[in-house]
Structure formats: structure tokens, C-alpha cells
Image (cartoon, rainbow, N blue to C red; front, side):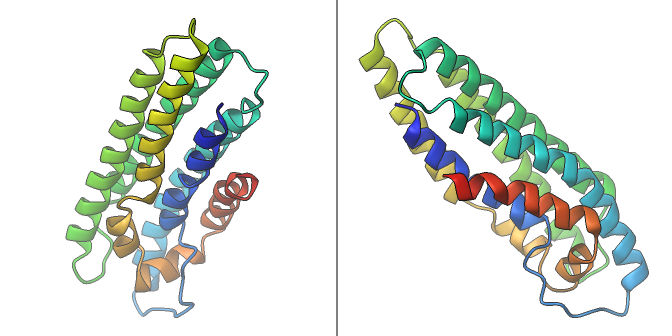
Length: 196
């Protein structure tokens, strides 16, 4: 019943990967020091949130067995969506606090990324509300409700992380790729994607 939800959820980790500097082209830049400290600040903040997202994803996947009761599934999914909403909000706040990276259009890229992260946070909060509203007494209705949520989750996992990709392109991505905390953030975020 919850398998489609788990599969859709594993795509959510992609959003964190976008921010964790995995797509570095390996080039180093002249403004290394300022950009490096910016990247470190963001990466250090992203790491615990990436773990929170990965853990939430894992908890939903653990609850995918068909012998889980609708009540168990609803409770787990609700908590997972809350955790994801909180994590994306915290990542957005971290990018906001770090300020604009010293690259071309850094302020615009930062602003767009924060807006996108806040939007993702809001979307997960909406999914939590929807899960909380599902009726667990009727298994068929509950399954239908979950399908609807899985569809939205799938869209969410595929939707815009364009601003994040733009933020961490080029020099910013290279600086983030050098940060140990970004490397471990991408590892913990990608783990549940393989289990989907």
C-alpha cells in the first residue's frame, strides 16, 4: 500500500544532493577563501538536515510492508513529512544566513535557492496535513488517499531544484565539493534513493 509512496519519496533525496555540491566540475577558483568559508557554512548546516531527510525517507520505506496498519503508516508518514518540512526550512535558513556567495549573480542565486527551499518545506507541510486527514478505518479509501499523496510527492521530487542547481554551479559547486560535510551530506542523502 505504501510502496508507491516510498518510491516517490526516494526521489526527494535528489533535492538535497543538488545542494550538497556533488556535481562539482573539480575546477578551483581564485576567490577560494571567501567562497570556501561560505561553502563550509552552508555545508555544515546542510549535513544534519540531509541526515534528517534520509532518516525520514528510511522510516517511510520501513513502513511499506503490506502488514502495517493504516494507523502505523499514517503516523510514520506524518512524522516523516514534518521532519522533511523542517529540514528544508532549516537548509533555506542556512543559505539565507550564509549570505550571497561571491560569484556572478550570487545574490540572485541565493535568493532563488532560499525561495525554492522554503517552497519545498511548505509542500511537505501540506503533505503532512493531507496524511493527517486520511481516514484509516476504511483500508481502500486510505490506500486511495496514499496514492494521491504519492503522486504529489513524485511531482515534488521531480520539480524545481533548478535554483539549487544554479546556486551550486561552477565555482560554488567546486568550493562545496571540497567541504567534508558536503561529501557526507550527499552520502547520507543518496542512501535511501538506492533503497527505493
